[in-house]
Length: 270
Image 1 (cartoon, rainbow, N blue to C red):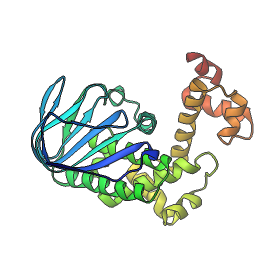
Image 2: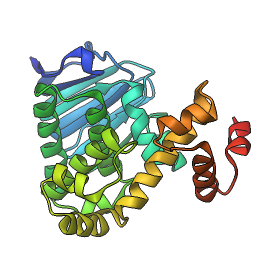
Image 3: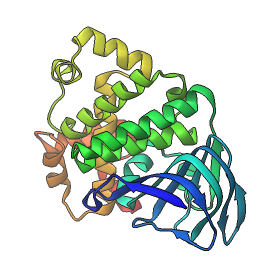
Image 4: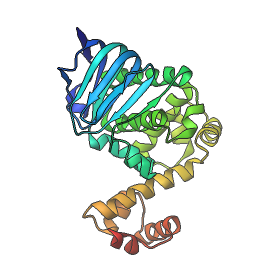
């Protein structure tokens, strides 16, 4: 007999279930959203899909494409079954421009973790459950999933060296940045949000992310500018205002320095 305990409301564009027990391949796992992850702490047996059977191993994390039913055959001592929307996945793609990141869910793939890496992955899932129960907003969840995928899939190599506390601090900073990057530029503001002194936050960002607050804000603003220029009907003037520029000319100059081409040249690429 299997046991799945649901923690997350559907309105959050994500569903996370604690999964354990005995599974028979006659019954498929259900998924509300297209992006699917199976996180195994300890298990034996196999994950069965049309493309073949894959061993369930301790510490194995599966990244599963939307196509095809997911069936399990075997015994799971502890694990998580997670599915979430493409909208939440988009933040990960914004932060990871490597083509391999875009293909993460194209075909079934997996990564094996052990030791501290596996412990951190499960701790992140446990905290994610708590944050959703605390009714955190969708932007925060998008940041959380981005960090989790970057860590478990190995795209953000620097994350592997961080302690669990540093991972949580990184997540907190990303969430604050995501909510305020358009209008708040002061190190004092972000330091207060992090519960740190400005000096300590500067040191943390330099050590963990390898970038200053100014560079991180600029990068996030320009990523948003790219998305709006290519995938919205807003005018350049409207985008400039939305991103906190007092004059369109300032936006144009900043964008050209960042991308090496003008706003109009970039927009024509779409």
